[in-house]
Image 1: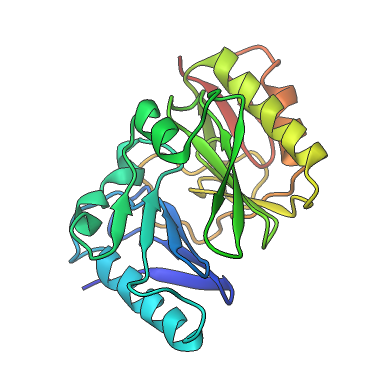
Image 2 (image 1 turned 120 degrees about the horizontal axis):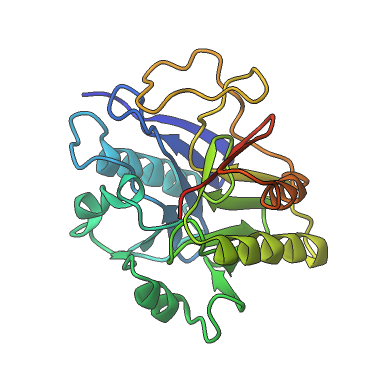
Length: 259
């Protein structure tokens, strides 16, 4: 069995990467713990636990956190499984968690996302989601995919952006929606009472050589760019969206008009 790659970003936040050997997309997942419940963002690109033991990984990380916080959680300790967007490489593992005790898997259509989180004016409205002493701001982010959401964690200052912003190919399926999403994220960044410290997307597709990406299907990326991106990258993306051509190359990302 292939073990998942994970990193504790702080005592309550885990970054998980599906191994390249299990699927070339190698998406990043994030597990956030609060007093009342935890939140998993995305479930990866495979249903095969033999190559990516998602459920075992979530169970072991949760037990580790609960052992370190014996007085801070409710019993049974709930898990909410949500998604940055509904493309297959981010939702394939949902079935592995569907029958997990105290677990809610949020649906993947825009209507299901809107209903579960309580958006009243999608995607313009920003809604809160409380894990218990840990508040997230949810920002509608269609353009790459209709049900896409960005998640801002006030506790860490991390904006989780899925495939909307990552060091890779930014596939623009609906340009007007994508532009409005980037402008919405810029407005959120500039107006947030809690500073946005960094952006974490769901893939690394760029090499450390500026403007050079790895071809689709690459399973070995020994010199890849870091996942974390500065908040200022939003301004670069917005400017790149106004450049002519179907493929606009920048040092840290490539805008691909794919609509």
